Image (cartoon, rainbow, N blue to C red; front, side, top):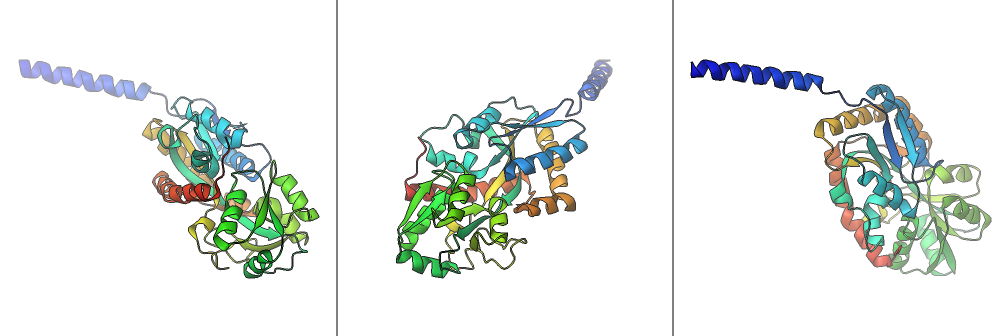
Length: 324
């Protein structure tokens, strides 16, 4: 009798659990926000809107891109880190906001290693080493020789930016003396580079390609592990002799969610994102603006982050850059 009663109770419990599970709404049931901690109009914004448009078709809900620029990505990243872990706030950010900023700021309002979780690395933005055409150097070796014997300047789109840290590292590691000129953004820096007010800069392919095509800038090398399809004759920095790990980093657009987001929801977002990034149409559109598609797993994205952590830490320590 007792055994029969327990059997009935177990059966009832299973029915109730089943009904409860079936009553749970399938994610997503409302619009999703993509928080981008940078201004509209750049490569990161362009790719984020590509993803939002295509992922919304797969997830069955609108995806709204919210630009939250300010403080080198800190403001928008903090908004996402503090959002509810329910899958309705997704962060699309660049490497600096979740990696380099940890060393550039004495204290951040968020801890990316504790408050955010990886979904995927969306794409990598190759950075080009370019010079004003009046500089006689035709390759990296000639540039280093010229810089060792001439007063020259390099521009960056801001203190602590990739261009600043990499150029400063080039200064120290190759014992040259380039003067740093910091700008508030990449556009005014490129304008002065074209005009000859500065001599050298690391620039994004997205912004520099039109000036390279028109002969207003000369490109000597590209960061990253492989050449750009859009500039197949331009060597990587490693091929040009700069094999230090500090020269191999590329700026990546990374998709993350607040830590604690349920695993099934993270998997759903990851699956949709990777499916979109894997389509030929999106890959071609990314490459058309100088971005190399990635779309790896959340586990691989985390592993890449951990591998680059000490590299960015060394870059900031060697250059002494600070943003507060």
